[in-house]
Length: 221
Image 1 (cartoon, one colour):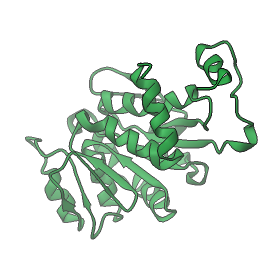
Image 2 (image 1 turned 90 degrees about the vertical axis):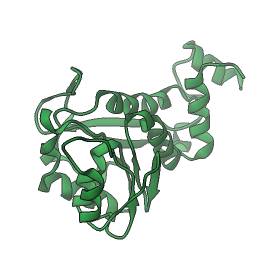
Image 3 (image 1 turned 180 degrees about the vertical axis):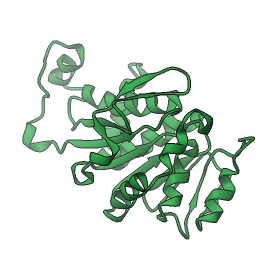
């Protein structure tokens, strides 16, 4: 690690030790429906947020999109929206992130035309769409997984999530994490970090993503 990079990480230096013109900053949209899975949303913010402590690479900024000014997670986390779902300009973002949630706590609002339109806008532009748990189901509903494969939460007592994927032409994969044509999915919140690390790699490249992982690990070697 260079001396400038070490000073940046320690907080002594406030500017990145790389010329601004060399950095290609990214922006991700975190779409939260009521009853979202708290850990999945937090993981998205954490993994992408750690790019702010990479002295040699671009940051990935995150905007929260919701259907109202405040959205509440299943376990009590409250988030303020940066933008309302109906006012999102997809061209401003490089990736879309959709955590899962609990249908009995309001997650059903994710199954709507506005979300479907956003998903299609990102997917058709070749931008990554990262989902967790049941967050992939509204993505399948949007039609962008037809002929593809994805993972989803399979242990719900009230919802046949694998069956919903099949309904929209997508093969259910009983795997932890699946990526198909830029759409990332996983079987549950335990794998949300893997999803976000994979998304980060797609946004900034393998070398920068590995650097972030090392910082988050917190060990010197």
